[in-house]
Amino acid sequence: TAGLNRQRVQAAWNAVSGAQRYTVDVYVKDKVMYCTLGSSMVRNQLYFQKDVLLEQINGYLSDDDMYIKEGEPPYINELVLK
Image 1: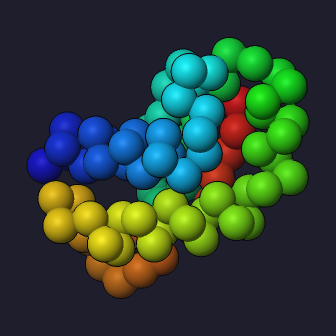
Image 2: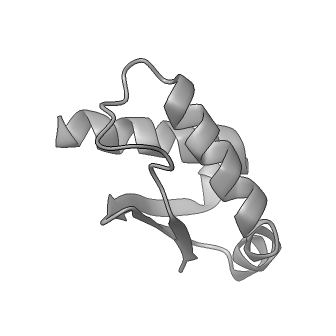
């Protein structure tokens, strides 16, 4: 289940952020999503959209039937861009 959820979180990030080609890694630990980006310019642009991205990612995961939901929403409480 952890592997499937990791895939679904990555799909949510790619769909919502539009930064798939700049994304090096995405993972979630303790309801915190960590995104490593290969472009500092893209990271800075996304930094200012963190609240909106967080809301959209949680919405995406809520609607995703393949995402194994653990606990109540929000599924991601914080977004860390690296």
